[in-house]
Image (cartoon, rainbow, N blue to C red; front, side, top):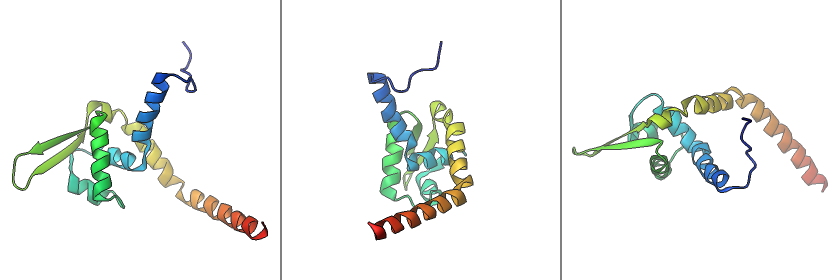
Length: 129
């Protein structure tokens, strides 16, 4: 049996695209990576994910919970305590997510240089055109 075709225009491909949109967005990648270290409270995630707003973290966690990637456990204490953890299915993403985050961090300097070069060329083109 050969590799599946990723270009087949069928309902499963469209549904898979929706899941990839969820787990492929920048905040979901960071949330999954952070939860790979173990269960965390909302405030820990907010503190550990630089630049994420409270609203965006809430939206991201709800989406990951809806897709079965994250579990949310609320404890009836005052003040309320809520813990988030990866599900078994969510843990299967750790290697892939870790590789993507590692790749981005490992190539920051190269990407910065490529962007600067592109921006300089674009500025020259805009000045001429």
